[in-house]
Image 1 (cartoon, each protein chain N blue to C red):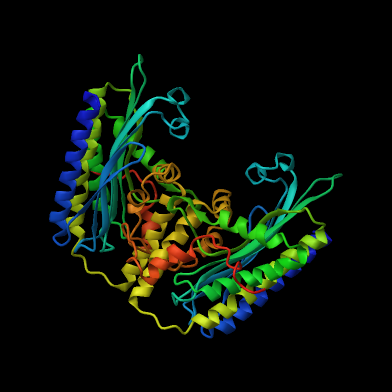
Image 2 (cartoon, each protein chain N blue to C red):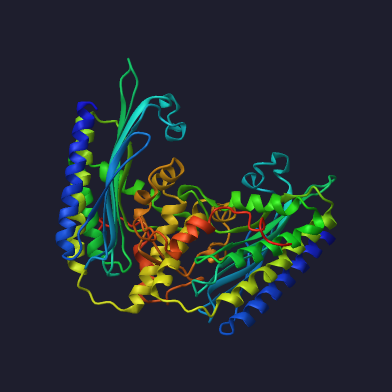
Length: 306
Length: 306
């Protein structure tokens, strides 16, 4: 492991610690349980899961660091020149499914990839982002979430937030429903056009911004009373989350198809889910407003003061 | 529509009627609700759904008949010579999710495909099968299910049942769990090595056998008392069903990716589902026996008298 990988790894392990600690405080009930695992092909990870908390019904914050002697062809389909190189992939990936339907589900991920070959320059890139999936939308939550995203991107250029906001909308799109998974955020991949230090700093800015983006929303919504109606709607909408993750999410599919650790990959799935036939919310209801207003790939900051 | 398509269509519509009628009698509570739909590209279907019955928590029995002027390349990837032909595809597809965890989920499908071109012989084939997914396995149910399958195949040759039984095991395999979806049954596709009349007769034999295979199992198990423990296990196992259908099932993925009718395709998903982190049944428990004994691609008829 070289200095770069070492530095990224140290950051990621610390990020996982900080996020778990903050979420435990916010939850006030359950604790994360850690499951350290090793991968037969090389590397391993530490999976941390929280279940049946006061706030979090199910959540996972995963660190993984896998490496191998030869990059599998499927991992390098878009870069055939990398096939056969040794590689390391490090990342933190998390999904939080709160119990209260007024608290949105959140997802974040930061990752680093490096492919090496004797006598040649290593090829590396960063990826990551965070996105929010509300059940009952709230304008101020969306604006706050995107403002934190924009502020994290700002030091790296004015074009960065719009570019990765749009990529997020494009990536988290449920094609067969013709609707986005949520209200978006940031998504970036293959980031290597800046030098290493700048790229790494950007990944850290995104990783560090997640708690700033999510916690205020959680705090505002977690005491909102709800009943069976809101719960049922949440369960149905969680079905969309499952549909997206299992049908489209590249990370999930690549992980499952390449013999990744199934329980760590599918940790992202919600704890309780429902599917009904052709369930549509009543026109004019708060449930209808979710798809009609919130799930529309909006520019949430268009009308918001800086 | 030519005589062959007409004959297949008449059979399929009648099969849908017979299956729905028998399941309604068995349920004794809810009725199927019909939703007739048309496809912008040509054709349509009648989707029938039953929800919250006394026996069936959610079930769907779909008839569809779609046609088009030009076979999409994705539909003919394994037969490039058919690209551009006009086509018709007809089928009945069903999934029944009972409420009681002692009653297995069942799935059946029969389908006919024909691709035509002026001045050339039409190319046609049949496909179909049925398979069973228990939560709490019962030897006699598995033997009965497979005996009905074998008897349906017998008039068509002694090699037919073993061939399609094995294809079913291969097809309904959840690779990332390294386990089968259920205890199998029959699966066949691309059937055109017999003449049309024989092939059609075989499809009818399979379609007609479904109720004979399923109803006795339902009748034996539906009054078995169960509690929260069995229900929770059922919900977790239903998660495997979702994983299979959304990650691997070719019909589901092709339907979703080709702009099929989402609500009819995803009718197969269970009504209530749960995912937990790394949940494993206690060794020696009935829940452990499901994977250890029943989900093992067994030859259920090896020890059974004819």
